[in-house]
Length: 329
Ligand code: 2RA
Image (cartoon, rainbow, N blue to C red; front, side, top):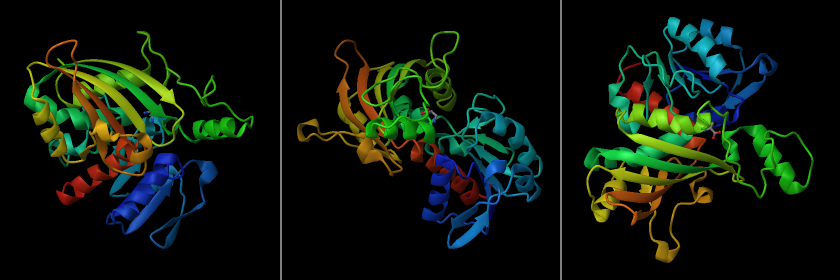
């Protein structure tokens, strides 16, 4: 299979390349794609080296699949050009997620909706993926009425400049500012840009994408997204109200038998999900399950995942694996 990785030199792009190798995805030819300034750089992959090419060159090579992590504007312009030559695109940007003609996929939830007609497939936002993976089976059993989520997001979600700012601050070194504020020893309630309604784009992604992936616009969602000085993964405090009462042991049973979810819930042994333990792993970790004693039919939970892996690269490649394994590409 001829596979293009668009944004091959970025943080998610590098994780995608590692995963393609780690998961032994069947690649005959790799096409690493990046901006003009990186063209010609050598990318090592499975014991061979491949030169980085620009987008026009990659389209002309007509890859079978193109894994994008290169920002929304690049995806809006170039995903259709790849699709026009028969390439199936899986895009990590927000460009296509809310387009009603495009599917927004978490493989364990809705990969079975994919067909050969889907030439541009949207990968959800990292903080959405980890939340809906845990909530989908609970929604199926108990019907979700409302979700209140607060996120604690790693600086790696903003990109390499934010990670560098955090490293510099911790080393006491002045450097470029990816944020208007200090990151170290801080919690910044500002992920992505603010919208008219006072929410950030990151918070509205949780609202809109959750409703689309769970295919239920009646689910009420409200979110607060906070940037914290970790580099390992995103954590989320989730309060979920169901239409009916639930059995807590049944919730734990469902979660511990959900593909891609690991239950870590034994507070008496200080066992609960933590970003530092999720780093480098592909699962979504759930713990701190307990009834919300302030209102009926409501559950509190704590959800953690590596935002660069299941939150981006792993989910993307799992979609590609599904397409391949089901002869859709
Ligand atoms: C973030 N989810 O964490 C966004 C984009 N990766 O900033």
